Image (cartoon, rainbow, N blue to C red; front, side):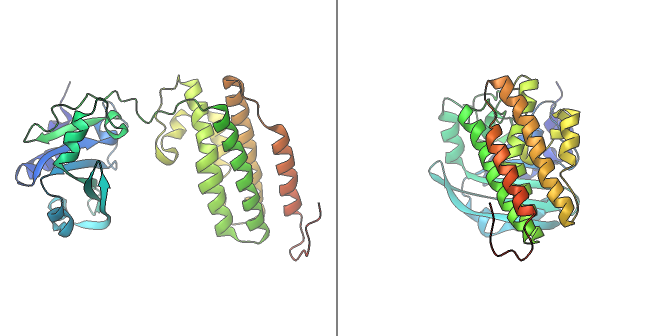
Length: 299
């Protein structure tokens, strides 16, 4: 099998830079670029852990980041505890298109992870050792590449996602009635869709792929795995700024949740809460039909 570290010029550049840095004792690559036959592309991040004798010089002066190009934008983590030590990091977007997410770890962290009988999810999902001057990584277990694959929900989790979904729908309706588009879209997309509908769609994917797929954060790669009719209905929930079209998007989102949740529930042996949906949708229509200056809510 070809060595990706030798074939990737950015990895070679990282290794060469690390070899010349006395404080850098080891360097590891995690996430999508560390997975054999992964789904990375030219815009994928390089998620790099720098194992250091002392993180403070790399935190106090971040000019070392310029070794990899001209920085366009930067997010900096504070020093925070992890495995009994202080770690930091930064997300770095370069003008060249290169993006490197550096984690800054003292050597004690990697030593403690290597001494553990199992890997943390970040490593079990996939890692590559790019550099190790002191054999700090020798005790690391090999990754199984199974971390971050969704597992079947309990019935309580299934029901909670649906109930929270309809609770959030009530907020969307309230904000739409107030003609408050930003708030309505935020609840619809960040809560109804991302927190409650997306997990249901991921469970649907896993059921049909033997609980073996990593859909990715925020729904990345979902189009690749989701059944075509469900994807088309999901696309239909994204609309413009019109008030009426956003009401329609709300009800289309509910229809998609019903369709996906019914199929997931049937496969897992869980009952879909039809009565909750009936009452919630009736409530939403009452809000929609309120006069703009209504003084009371008539049930």
